[in-house]
Image (cartoon, rainbow, N blue to C red):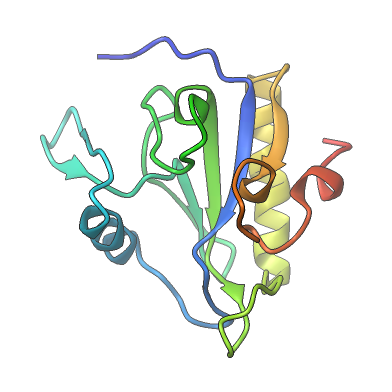
Amino acid sequence: MKRNRKIDTIMVHCTATRAGREVSVAELDAWHKARNFEPYTEVRSGKRVYAGYHLLVHLDGSYERIRPDEERGQHCTQAGMNNRAVSVCYVGGVDNNNRPCDTRTEAQKRTLVTLLKTLRAKYRDAQIVGHRDYAPKACPSFDAKMEYGEI
C-alpha cells in the first residue's frame, strides 16, 4: 500500500562509524532493531525492515534503497520529521577517536550530490538539511544545509 506523504525535507545523516569501516544494510537494520525503531513491512517479501533511512551510501559510492520514499522513515526524533522527510545516510562520520569528522570519500560525495539532485527534482519544494539541524547531534558531521544549498 502506497502512502501519500508530503515530503518537504531531505535529511542527510551519517552512520557515525569510523572512516574506512563499511556498514551493511543488515548491520544497520540490527542496530535499529535493537533500538526499537518502528519497522515497515516490505510488500513483496513480507520482511520487516527496521533500518530507518531511505537510502544508504557506501564507501565506494554505491548506494542501496532501504525504505521506499512513500514509507515513513525512522531517522529523526524531532516531532513530525519522520512523516515529512526522506533520509539519505552515508557510511562514516567519526574519526578514530569517535569524534565527529567528515569522512566522506570522493565517491560518496559524488553519489550524495547525484541522489540529492534526484530527490530535489522529485520533491521540488523540499529543503536539504543535516540531521544536526533538527537534533543536538553532529550528524552528518558537516553542514549539509550550506554544502547543498545550491541544489
